[in-house]
Image 1 (cartoon, each protein chain N blue to C red):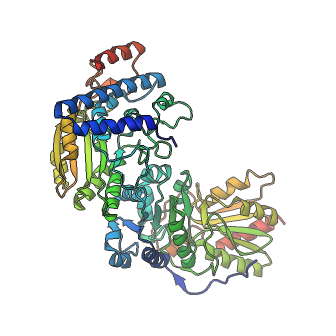
Image 2: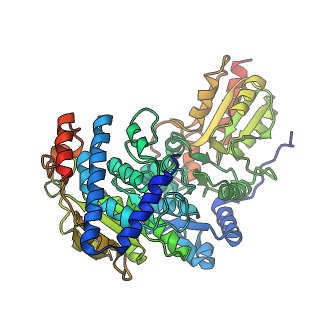
Image 3: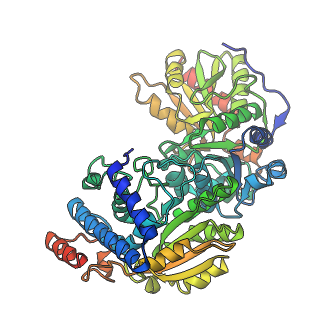
Length: 320
Length: 293
């Protein structure tokens, strides 16, 4: 078991790592292209465009076209990274994602930029909290949520090589480095901290908060395991089953709706086992966010380290 | 994945060779005969399956026959050949017409048509590229084929390939906004390696297009989006052939093919109820007699 990784103070916008890695890959492989919807700036593709002007296809504000064009490129031997703000990419082009990408098995890498509530004050129209739920329901589509810049780089590289229909959630809300030297491993949860009382299964922005929560819970005598579930679909069911036998309860934490997202995915594994364990699902429960910055909204919806700690301790003590 | 039928593929190659050598009237007769054979095959297939989109199939079959039997640079025995022309049937509900055409080209054995829409058949009610060679992308929901074709045309440009992308759109389908997003992109990028063929039969599932949501003036619409537009009789094989192969300018080309839904079967022609009605055994016999003329 690796040593626990302490959350550092410095925080990062994962789009930067995403864009740097994409440009690096494009230098190595001329099949790499980017498709975007007037989001050269917000998808951090300025450098890519400068270096590879012909390989950046900006279709303008037209997400259905964007995903279809990506599929056409993929079906012609290219490796398209289709980049757009996650709410519009997933919401507007959902049928294209289903039919042109997943069902057609066209190896498009869908990059949902600034997901969750990253566009805090812009409001629910610009939030992407439904994406995990929608996309997890689509057969043959990998759903990946990197937790920090290093894992984002690693996931981008994996996606370019895997040539599978995939969705990558690329965070804008700044997060600390938490994954250390553990590369993204498709389909596998990584244990960032071991523990024996309760397991917290977290993804994306929630991972660093889960680690903080575990640290604080330890001070109160509760041992919390933290799993970074960066692949939401297909889910690492074995890691969930181990958590069920080796700890006594599971908390899930996601910056997304709990209706069909990570929590629902984990719960579906838990309830079909012979001896289910109690769970707490942290996330957004079928509500549109009020006005506020991202940090405020995370607090509003009970997605702070303190909330996670409280849920974990609650489960540990309820069962004691 | 189905595999090619070498015998039919060889016959198809001979046909192409003969067509290339033939004069106009012979060419017209060659394609007319093959299109009507496909119509008959399609009617029997729909009758057997008890479902299908017969009106649209009859409407689009002259377009498909002309493309596959005299235009497209494809090889049914090498369906993955990188520099093949690409063909996308955006109006995926006329999969029956596509399947009969692909079988006539030799992409898979014609006997497979007997399984159309049956349990576990590769020949689903809408085409699936993973199972059927010659199908380039899965269509069915309308408004998907043109954006994907634009991506294919952009890819051909990036690869400096001379391959051409042909996409067949239903006219009613043009009510889907995604088409116009893609039309704008194709015009903006001057994708002269892209041809969109509109099967302009003026009927959609429930009513006439112009009574539902007006499409005219369709030529002006495409021109305004930066396309060259050709308008032809969609049942005149020579006119279609010429429109599909004429030298291209610097813009994408839209071929508005004026067609009749149910074409070739008098009691189906231009009648909205034949969108997806299934002909009876007697009706198939009557239709076959008309098509054999």
